[in-house]
Image 1 (cartoon, rainbow, N blue to C red):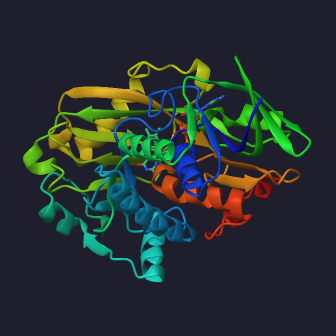
Image 2 (cartoon, rainbow, N blue to C red):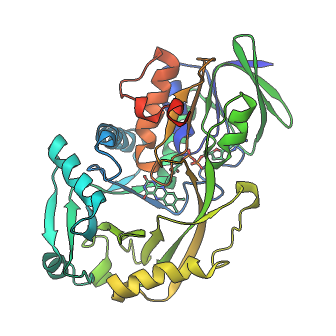
Length: 377
Ligand SMILES: Cc1cc2nc3c(=O)[nH]c(=O)nc-3n(C[C@H](O)[C@H](O)[C@H](O)COP(=O)(O)OP(=O)(O)OC[C@H]3O[C@@H](n4cnc5c(N)ncnc54)[C@H](O)[C@@H]3O)c2cc1C
């Protein structure tokens, strides 16, 4: 049986980044993935993800977002690929919106550039937005869009170039600790690891169960759709990525890149589903198109053109919508990173680096305590 210093189960957003940082530091690293990343079966497809720094979900994320942004720039340098586009990110909501308040406090605490705009100023600046008078918006000019699939491809190439072994289309079927080591089994082989990272996205809970861990993760079906939009209003050279908080719902979207249309999704809701039994056809639920089209008709009417394409993707929700990045309480050589609750991609570079430090150094430069598993017990 082959032995590795670290085995990574799940080489998607988090796992592939971790594989790169581990291999770069010389650790013998085996990455196993059930598919061929980047792929369309998990949580990272659909071309793009938003990266924001002034964080509405909690100002404690800001150091993570800033470190992630630095690492994305380094990855661009190292790979030569375009991974980030600085479109700015516009967050809009009512005057009493708690999310926007947290965005403002995050920006103030960390001296991040942030412009506050009245509804009228928003309408004057972007003729494609209809914002009601009781709304306002925060524009983060330094933030923007990550090309998520290209980023995974870049980490994959660099991890392999740094000496990592990647086995694709190789599903891990069981995990078992034997003495100080971990045995990782697939349908055709077994591998021994001195250390283990479980980063299997929506499939993480049963694998962690094998190791005696009960982690409250709910895989959830989500959709995104692209609509025909006037590029003179919504083109990526003039229109930002955006988030709209409407009280009981939240929508996010992307400007039209190279004429692809405006891409839009609804962040809340979705259908809890086992990832192997997911309804993967866009349009199976009326809400797949209906929710986002209704949003566009109200707030961005010239972007509510013909449906160009729709995709089905997965969130892995935790009860408090914060991540779970921790060590096994009894087996410190096992680390896991899961439950990214629909807002994890922007951090993947920083998460990859942090878990590589946990595994190789025993602790990470960034404080991971807010992501501990024990908060659920
Ligand atoms: C529609 C949509 C929009 C989003 N928008 C944003 C956004 O704008 N900004 C943002 O920051 N985040 C966003 N997110 C969230 C972000 O994409 C996820 O949080 C992130 O991709 C999760 O990464 P992951 O590594 O946990 O999962 P994945 O990237 O899915 O990786 C998990 C990997 O594990 C593999 N795997 C699973 N089981 C096994 C097994 N048994 N054996 C071997 N391999 C296995 C899978 O094949 C997969 O490759 C969005 C997500 C979706 C779905």
